[in-house]
Amino acid sequence: MKLRNRNLDPEQIADFECFRSGILELIVKNSPLNDILVEIVQGIETLNPTMLCTVVLIENSKIKIGAAPSLPKIYNEAIEGVPIGPEAGSCGTAAYTGKRVIVEDIRTSPLWKNYKDIALSVGLASCWSEPIRSHTNETIGTFAIYHHEIASPNEFDIFIISETADLVSIAIEKSIISGKLTESERRFRDFFEKNSSVMLIIEPNSGEIINANQTAVHFYGYPHEILTKMKIDEINMLPDEEVKQERMRALSEERSYFSFPHKLASGIIKQVEVYSTPIETSNRHLLFSIVHDVTERKIAEEKVNSLLSEKEMILREVHHRIKNNMTILFNLLDLQAKSQKDEGLANSLKDATSRIKTMSLLYDKLYLGKAFHELRLDEYLIPLTQEIISLFPYQAKLNTEIVSAQLTAEQLQAIGIITNELLTNSLKYARDPSKELEIHIKIWKEEQDFHLFVKDNGKGFDSQMANPEKLGFGLTLVNMLTKQLSGKLTFSGNAGAEYHIVFPVNKTRH
Image (tube, rainbow, N blue to C red):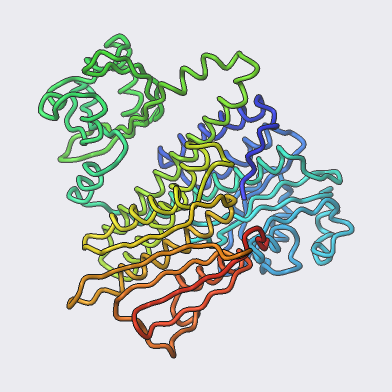
């Protein structure tokens, strides 16, 4: 669970955000994964010179050093290939349990009994390790911080280790996707035209706008046929020669990130961030640009000198970045799913995009909408179910009856993912061609318990197969999240699929 403490030092947050932006630029530029991991490790060590950092990857349940430039070679060689387990130091234990491991004193920790001699011999006294999780919540590595002295983390240290683990996860998964993704022009066009981000394709020498997606047409306010006859110089308010120089930097991959003032058809000036990368199509080099409207953020930054508003402005920027990361992951996974010929793999990727969409919607509600304490279950779950229904190409009748109750962010996240899994399962497997698919979702409160009930009128399933392990990852995930809520799950498939979850109002198991 991420730390969102408003008492953190805004200057430290700003420094970390600057560091994060630099890493995101490297990811967008498709820099080699090893280079990115080294930059991440050295960047954190620059923010706090007392730290020695490392990224460990997990391959076949064994430790593989991803980046550890500041640790002695003899130590890295000693832990390379060590199996993960419940007493495998901080990193091996964190990877095994999937939980953060804080060891303040290696000398006395039972987790280090087999490895403390080598650690102490090279002057390592403490080690904090955070699991790195994939979009499927699989532990794919750890990010660790060592000290030469016995040390316990403060609030900002926990923020750093958690956020950095997320950043490493993005870099790893982007590298995996980039390595596997061989896009055809048709698939790229589909990704381009339907994307919710403003996207332009520009001829770098002349600045002509070769193509623009519908989001760009809506943003700039010009019809598509007019926008694609314009030059970017007519939109960008910087001098023409300066704009051309920036295009050349993007073409040569000298830079990929830019900040510009763009003029809309209405005459309004918007401050935008542009991520540009060269692409080759029909034997010519073009620039593929993703444009983000950051006008409000720029205005906020101009007021950051005000002590009372400084912290909130910086944290808003943090949330903005995280939302962008979610959008990029969703779009890349969606694109990969559409490109797969293997139906099973495509369905798995679609499930992953649906889960990311679920968490993204909760994030919108928690951090970009109402005050945290005002978020209610019906305000979150009803839009979520409608969003899930809209992702499927066929009709289904959805009936919802959801109590208007305040829940914690942890409870809402668990319920959101559970609902996504059960609703998606019905949409994919329950359809009977002889009748319209109907799905009922009801949540109510009885005394000190909440009840979540999901039922469809579909084909159902063999009651003898009513076992989470046999029904696959989705129901296993539902069962795990139900336990996290300290609840109980029952289900049957005799007359359509029917699921009933009961969990206490205030108790959540950690």
